Amino acid sequence: MARTLERLHRLLFICLGLTLLSLAGCQTPPEIRAADVHPDRDPPLETTVGNAVRYEILPEQSDIRFLVFRAGPLAKLGHNHVIQAKEVRGGILLAPQIHRSRFFIEIPVKNFQVDDESARADEGSEFFPQPDEDAIAGTTRNMLGEQVLDATNYPTIEIRSISLAGPHWGLDVTARIRMRGVEREVLVPMAIDYQRDTLVVTATFTVKQSDFGIVPMRVLGGALQVDDPVKVRIRIVASRREGSPAPSQQSK
Image 1 (cartoon, rainbow, N blue to C red):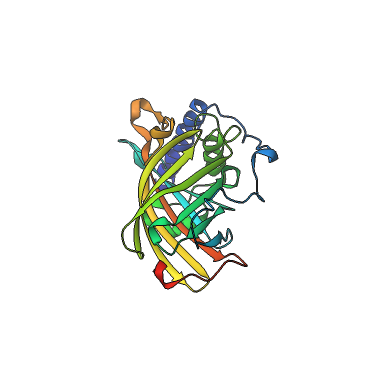
Image 2: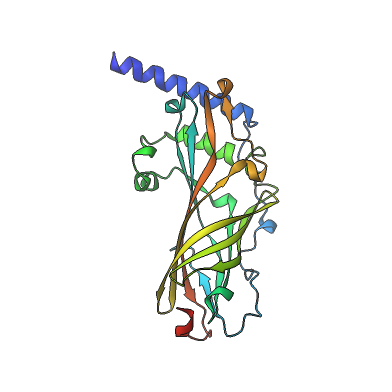
């Protein structure tokens, strides 16, 4: 009996998943033009910040996650998702007066990794059980497609600081996010760990998909849907650029 119920649940989930994908166009992952991504381009940071120390983001040590949640009365039939950004690029200018510091982050959309098993385990019981490969492939197609991130036309997401307030160890940063050609400003509480020639920056905040022109998927009159708010977790590791002066104690 338990096995029969499990099979029925799986069949219903697949059917609902196919319905969601059909609403999103059910297309193959879009091809990202190499010319749209600039891996060797210096991040567009202000260079007029006096005596600022420049740090470069280390992609292999940095981690940005987008946590997407199911919603609606039939939410248990869907999955929450962990979307990881890979090959994050950018830089930080650390000024002697901390509030004059700046940062820029560029996230290539084509490198998003969906529902990595270890990442889901990190995020706890809300992300259990692990979706199968077909479900992950479907989520990836949907995410990169025209109705969501539209990765063909908008191959990167950008996050840029506008202003900083608060103490050096816990800043309130007004950041501008550019996604799908739409810009929105959000308040991002950030913690900074100063480690000699390395900075470790962590933050957790929420954005709404609808603010960027994305209509969250919904079926059965909204009984099963993707929740509009998305939780963003950032852990950026940046190394002092060779030739850049050592940071002064004023930055702390």
